[in-house]
Length: 285
Image: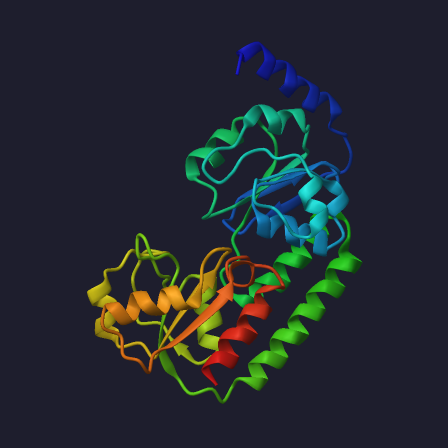
């Protein structure tokens, strides 16, 4: 992008920013964010952020999103500014945002650092526990100035979560393998939101203590844990039968359960993750 054009776009954004009473927030990674007022033009870099903003009544503030923001359906009409691997900075500046919200561990560090050079306030979202989703709804509501709707959304989520904890408290503890990806074979450690889902359902993650958030493992290591179930996300074109055939071909016994969950219900830190909780817990009962 020509340097002159970048400077002109940045100048246009600076001139459009209102000078009102300052608000101060601390994001999930401990960064302090200063906002002149509730943001009116927000760029959301990932689907879970987009979904949370709509949930708190700030969907009309979103001016651009990452490529995979597809829920709710209204998000499909929003301009795209790239994906997790590459953000189009020119499009970001053209959107004239007064806030960028990115995923702390899902947006590459190089992109976060590059975006910081634009001088636009940026909040990093990083929910790691089921309880964090309710808290994130409240924070987004406070940022957007939609606290009443955010509180209603958070309470509805937390009530359903509490009911699920009660319903499945008696599930026996079982060793589960969460297959985050098959090629390469990836799973999650105890710091990942998905580990919290497995734990609620009585699952024991044999790779919980691996220091990497999404560690790469080998087939032999999985077989050695003798998991009672393999849990995984399903996307269009994928099937439970294919995953089952893969693992049975490598020696998991016929008694092993295979629980596939639609990807949006397990890979997005939003209230819809409770749909995934229900399916996994019910599959293990």
